[in-house]
Amino acid sequence: MRNLSDQLLFVSREAQIMPKFYFNYFDGRQTIADPDGQDLENKEMALKQAELHAADRAHELTAKGEGVCDESIEVVSEAGDMVVVVPVSIMTNDVEC
Image (tube, rainbow, N blue to C red; front, top):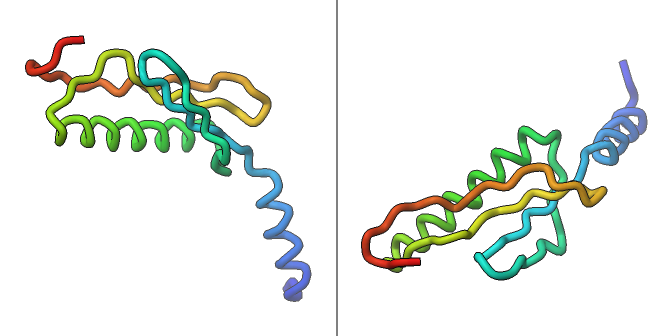
């Protein structure tokens, strides 16, 4: 059985290995960088988080009666590599792009 200091050291090491992902927002003209990022277990978790951000943005725009043209959430790794781009895709008939 591990003692408390061993358990804390183990948790601390796990926290250090989690990669950081940045969720930048592209509004169709410019990218708004995520300055803080988020520590997540892996790329799949980053994709899920990006999908949640995109769904929130789509809901926000729908509530305002606005459409979306080229908006997206760009997931970037701590190393600066593009991991995935999730489009904020909603269909509205009210607003033309």
